[in-house]
Amino acid sequence: MKYRLKKVAVLGSGVMGSGIACHLANIGLEVLMLDIIPRDLGGDKLKDPTLRNSIVDSALQNSIRSKPAPLYHKSFASRISTGNFEDDFEKISDADWIIEVVVERLDIKQQIFEKVDHNRKNNSLVTSNTSSIPMHLLSEGRSDNFKAHFCGTHFFNPPRYLRLLEVIPTSDTLESVINFFMEFGKVNLGKETVLCKDTPAFIGNRIGVMSATEMTILTKKYSFTVEEVDLLTGPLIGRPPTATFRLQDLVGLDTGDNVSRFVMDNVENDTYINKIKKLPEPKFMRFLLDNKFLGNKSGKGFYEKTKKKDANGKTIINVLNLETLEYKPAIKPRLEIVKTAKGMELLDKRLQFLVDGDSKEHQFFKDYFGALFAYSAARIPEISDQYFPLDDAMRTGYVWEYGPFEYWDLIGFEKGIALVEALGESLPKWVHDLKASGAQSFYKYENGKKHYFNIQNKKFEVLPGKEAFIILDSYRAQKPIIKNSECTVHDIGDGVLCLEFTSKSNSIGEG
Ligand SMILES: NC(=O)c1ccc[n+]([C@@H]2O[C@H](COP(=O)([O-])OP(=O)(O)OC[C@H]3O[C@@H](n4cnc5c(N)ncnc54)[C@H](O)[C@@H]3O)[C@@H](O)[C@H]2O)c1
Image (cartoon, rainbow, N blue to C red):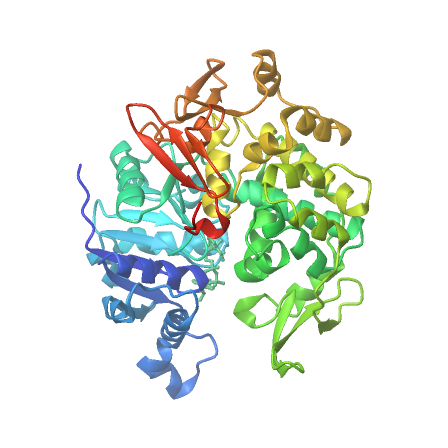
């Protein structure tokens, strides 16, 4: 069966719904976006069509104005029409694809899908953007035709920019539907499309939830401030400036909390989650959620952008003190370890330095990376049959420069094992198999190709889908033809030379 998309219905217009609607308009689709009617409308106001659509209309306008821009060009907004769930639901009968993007609650999503089942045309595609809820729970009770055309299409925030698209089929999803979304994601949306198992939070968020939780635990254990942890866990270790707490503000603390709770309540045989479930909720989390300080979407979360300016005319950003629960102007932290690490340009040298010392910052990194490695290794084969999709997901969905196993290689295979063992954790058999094969890394480069260790047949193989790529790193072991302070010329075989700029910002100088 061939699928052709012309019209799409996006159900929900929040942070993600609006972003997805804009991105689908970007690629030329006709989009209908629906949302709820404001709950506080009464009397004559309830009859006013403008007011009935006010949630969806203002969400779309806010999204269009947001930065970075969700639309390739503002004029593409004309491809998006809006409506509400009560007056316009039957319009989804025209849609070739219906994507659900409402609040992260199983009961609400199930109610929406029941309505979708009644209003959709046969064979139209139906997907959910849930961050954590397994697809088979969302399609429970639905018709056979719905189930056959249903899967997860999980975009990351912001949808135009983050390259990961997780496709999550159920056992009922037609092979043709899976193949369609894998291809559509890659070719039409330009995404790294990763096929996931139907487990809670799939790949990216399962590791993401663990990573964020561990950062929060370690913030408290080592008495760091919000600004300090964001300084330690951003570009310094190859991650975006949103780092840890700014990322939670971007995602929305309510959404993040729903996702974590869902993971905690629904995973099985996950020793890390079983352990942290017993810990009391941090009081700052309850404070933020109870006060609806939900991050960027409510104007305040861990950070608060004020209208005040400092002596240099710069906007004052307040930050939450996690102990006193007061907001105070953020201070740029001065940490010696950061100064030293920044002087190390190569990330492998920098990371090796960060996990090799006794200061509380070093301890923080040792605990974090040890826990990340132990957790990621233990998730195979539960969330993925091989380990490289975890690296793909964290690079493209969370914009980490490296995924967990790539970080492990940078820090060093044996050193990584030592970090895990120092936490009293053990490693699964497949890591011991890798070690027994004589390998000293999760990836190796040979003949211009990146190879991974296939844990089923215990052999190194070229990464699937990357056969057509030439990886420059794989030529570093051989002697270059020319090398000076500004460039290196490599012989990459077949009579082809590769000129690599190594000058500052790749600028061209005299050489
Ligand atoms: N925020 C992120 O970074 C992110 C990333 C990927 C996936 N997601 C997922 O996308 C979905 C939407 O998240 P979001 O961040 O856009 O949330 P949001 O809070 O910004 O928006 C939630 C939407 O649900 C609607 N809604 C609220 N109550 C409803 C009800 N009773 N019935 C129907 N609709 C209702 C709201 O009007 C709003 O449009 C969730 O499943 C979330 O897990 C979020």
